[in-house]
Length: 435
Image (cartoon, rainbow, N blue to C red; front, side, top):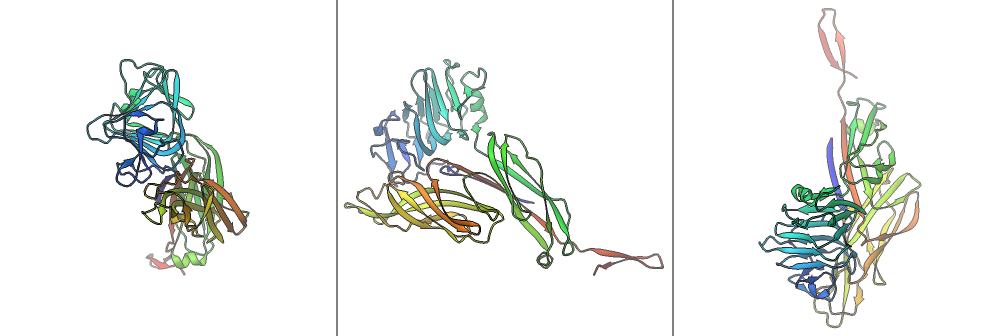
């Protein structure tokens, strides 16, 4: 079996956790409170420039950096989503996120937190750090979560609405446990195993029997896991698949055709998916989609009086079940602050990037720093049409941080050469090819 496991998270996609900022990322430029815009700058390609906003004030696809020997006080709950928070730049000086307040919970709407060797998160007084379900916490050092003599039950970490860790470990994980373990990864993870219990085939009409199982290999319980195998017509949903659990066995058969004889083998792929937006066809296939904006592409870098722009976006469209070779229509419009800009997509689906072609106008002079969140590029209106699927308009939120996880397994069964056994009257055995 050829196995290929692919994990994608809309809007976070497990972002590259290296100090390689992209335009639109936030970075600390001065010690201060998270809610103070003067604490932050936005990366313009060479440096962080203050623009009067703070991370999470508006959701988007950016990363946030606490680096350069700086301290940020988390004084609010940050509800706007962003890709990741990186604390520390490995230059030997301390970079700190300090959770401030008393008897309060501070929420960060991000799916990845990476605390590097010179970074740290510190709890002040009776404070809780609340994080979304499926968060991935990476700690490069065994003191990433500060654990001092004041460590007690009033300093906590909540994940997905449930208390996961208590500083001193009373009734839960301790901060020291997480530090020693290098963090904890709650991101959705799947594996799928497809096997043939038929060793081979030799003639038209032979039948191959398959068995398929799906395993939740992550720490989070998952709902509505989709299982698809077009060769055997499998298209089903596992309503609940808890952490570490393997599904029941799905079975199916495939009957050999002349084309399989001519080719000499049968190869196909089974999929397990979680998340994404789903549209179902009456012809027995589903279209699973995810979209998010990557960056704004201005028409000029000299924009005193304004500029035209398009937006680069990333897409994944998986056609599963009993898929046609192509859809008839796959296109859409990205809404950016009330302006609708068109984009086209390959009718066969797949994953990749594309650029809108609306060439919209913006009356501003920020062409060198503008980001999708500045333009409120949030909602995708996708038009789909195909066999058994009337022209359908689907609204996809490109900012909310929806996960899309795909696991796949390809099984190849080869044609076998079968022999008849002929025994002569001299008790000698000969093997000849079967006609």
